Length: 138
Image (tube, helix red, strand yellow):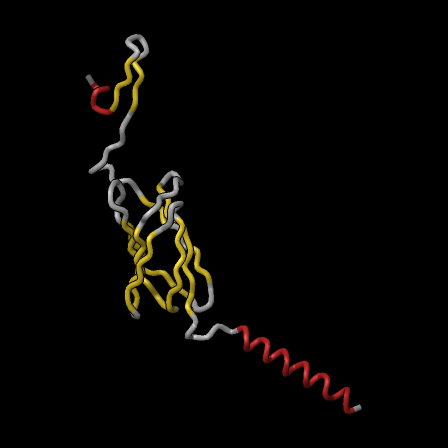
């Protein structure tokens, strides 16, 4: 009879302990993981991704195929993304990082077409010439 009473108590205590152990603590970092791509989905390497939060600024540079992963203290962040050259800067005003969780965050970069207009190709078949950009208008 005593065993019948003890088993349920032990079961409740062990379940409560396991549930408590799985709870994220405030001191644990969260993870932000993502890719940097252009507007047609081509991976963009070596992009600077900066997270601005109350506990400071954290920067990571995307890898050779545009991937990045960073651990950050839990909280709210403003994210700025920069790639020198043909892309506009990117900003996201609010990104929430949760303790012990992985946040997926992909960045889509847009071309700065004012500074770097697209190049067009035109094949002039009778003359067997390839013309680009403004030469096509002649």
